[in-house]
Image 1 (cartoon, helix red, strand yellow):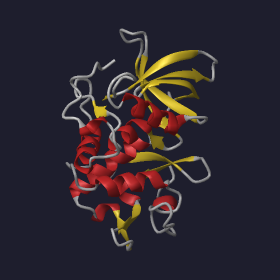
Image 2 (tube, one colour):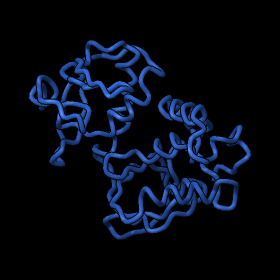
Image 3 (cartoon, one colour):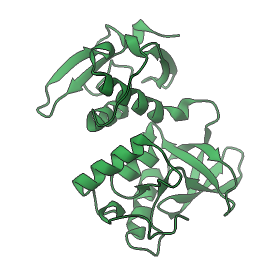
Image 4 (cartoon, helix red, strand yellow):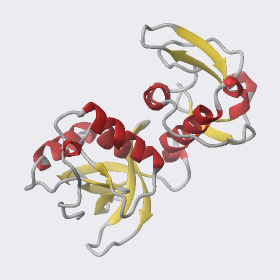
Length: 238
C-alpha cells in the first residue's frame, strides 16, 4: 500500500493537476464536472492509480493532495478532506471510472474495424477477433443522422492504438460482448458522451457520471453530435 509518500506533501506538477504521480485525465474530468452530483463518501476508501512510470500504486483518499486550477489559471493545493462532501463524492466516482481498466480482468488488444459509433471489432492478445458493443451508451448507426461523424470520432480515438476492454456482459442477442473501452487512461465511453457523439443509454444505464456528461454536452451543444437531437429514442440501440 503506497499512502502518504504519493498522495500527501509531495511536489505538485501543474501538468498533472494532482500530486506529480497522478495522471492528467482525472483532474480534467474532475474540474470539468465538479459539483454536479454528490453524496457522502468515506475517506477511508482506497483506490488504485497509474503512476507516471506505468506502475500502479494504491492510496487512500484521506491522504490525497489535489491542485485545483480555476478559470483564470490560478492553482491552489487542497487536501481531499477539505473538499465539500458533494465534490468529494464526484471525485471518487470519476477516479473509480477512469481507473477501472487497471483492475484484473481487463483485456488488451487492438481495434481492427469501427462499425459505428458504439460498435467495433476487437482482436485480443489471444489473436481472436470479436465484435464489441460499448457499455451504457447508444450512438447512431452509420446510415443515420450523425452516424458517420460518430464513427469517425470513435475511430480517431482508437486508430493504431493499443486499447483495453472490460467485458460487462457476454454474447448479447447479436452475438456481441458488451464492454467498457479505454485507450491508455482515457475512458472512451465518457469521452464520446461528453463530446456529443453518443448518449447515456438509460434503458441499460444508471450511470450518474454519464448522465452528468450528457447534460453538460447538451448545455454546451457539444461538437456536431447526436446530443443536439431531442432524444436517442428514435435510434435503434443496436
